[in-house]
Structure formats: structure tokens, C-alpha cells
Image 1 (tube, one colour):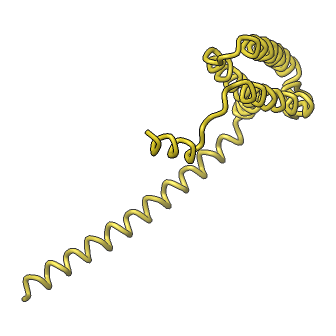
Image 2 (cartoon, one colour):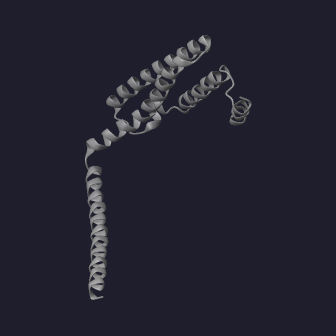
Image 3 (cartoon, one colour):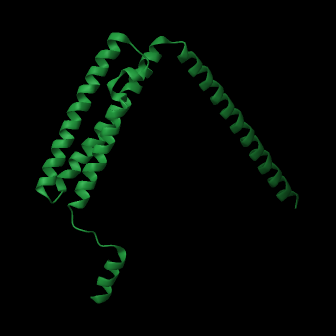
Length: 160
């Protein structure tokens, strides 16, 4: 009987030690991160690097979305819709590339940290890009054959 009691006592001691060491290591990690990010605020190049990252986020996001749509359009059955989609996506990619270049030139000339002065954050341009994605998606969806829902598929299976 004593053997089981000592085993459970050792097990509970180990669990308590593991819990305390986990909490202590987590607190040390958080304190270290606080110190590291506090130091990064005092480094001027980090501010420029962060601003560059923020300027590039919408461009990278929308170029990625347009490239994915561009590659998926290859499989579309209607040739007119396929070429229309490709042309719209190509224009959008060129405009986003142009705005990225002009924003980078503007950043390296002025080093402005306000995003309102960059073309990539123009509300009209961002809304137009989102609208283009939805409009082309709707055009492509309307020009394909109707997909059968689960009830129609079930009826066909039962008939055969």
C-alpha cells in the first residue's frame, strides 16, 4: 500500500514542478519579448522596415488573389469569359504593379509614415479591386453549367 502512495506522491510532485516550470518559462519568454520589442521601438530602421511592410501588404494580397484567379481561369469552359477575365486581371495586375513602384519611389523619397499618401491605400482603388474580383467571379459563375445539388445527385443514384 505504501508503494502506491509514494508513487502517487512522486507523480503529483512532478506534475506540480512541471506546471511551475512551464509558467515560469512562459513568464520569462513574455518578459524577453517585451524587452526585445521595446528595443525595436528605439531602432529607427525598424520603423522604416515596418512601414515598407505595411505599404506592401495590400499589393501582395491583391496580386496574389489576381494571380490565383488568373490561373484558375484557364479551366473555364466559355472562351469569351476566359479572355475577358484574363484581360481584366492583366489590367489589374499592371495597375497594382505600377502603384507598387510609385509607392516605393514615394516612400524612398519622402519616408512618409502616413499610409494615406500612398496609392495602394486609396479607398476607391481598393474597393474597385474587390469589386473586380466579385464581378469576374459572378460572370464566371453565371457562364458555367448549373451544378447539381445533393438532392438531384441522390435522385439520379436512386434511379440507376
